[in-house]
Length: 228
Image (tube, rainbow, N blue to C red; front, side):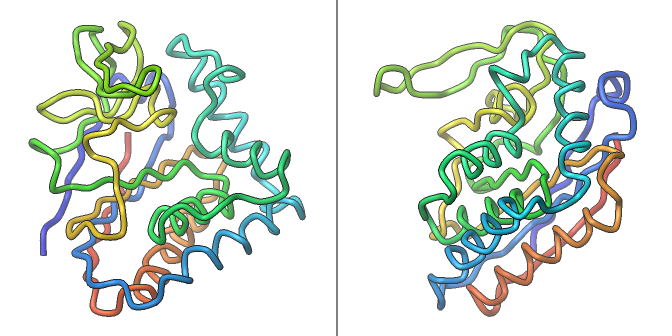
């Protein structure tokens, strides 16, 4: 069993005091039930439409303030959890994409928390949450074609030794480390601020690992709470 140990730059505590995250490493198994993620996603959409959880607005507002602290405009580039919730509130539901992606999107919606899912086999070195210098590279698509871009200096990004894996903290994921249900080594990062009760962070992690266990019996997990 492998264990992903991300590092958090000391500068993050200035930008987002009280930041903490749950890092979950998964040695995957073959998917036996492809419906688990889609069912969880449907239930999570219903919870969002019902106004759950009751602390969601406060948590997402705290993320908006964290984004403003490093120069991002949360209305234009919101945190991933807010972007998902806005889509559900607008459309009433979300289409299924991939069993594992559907599951971690369901966790994000149900707990109003940014959740990243990564193919750890594509990583070079361990993940790091840093303030970018602006010289790093990020792989993406532009006008339907693969392209490289750089984050802005001062932007909070996730990266590894090869480059940026997620821009504006948790706004846009790169291509290289994108996750799907066929990947053997999975890494999930559930990111929270103090407006989210700590016990709810652990509950979100349990929803993810319980869902993966149901989806792919025999999967192995390692979980670590990290603080900024």
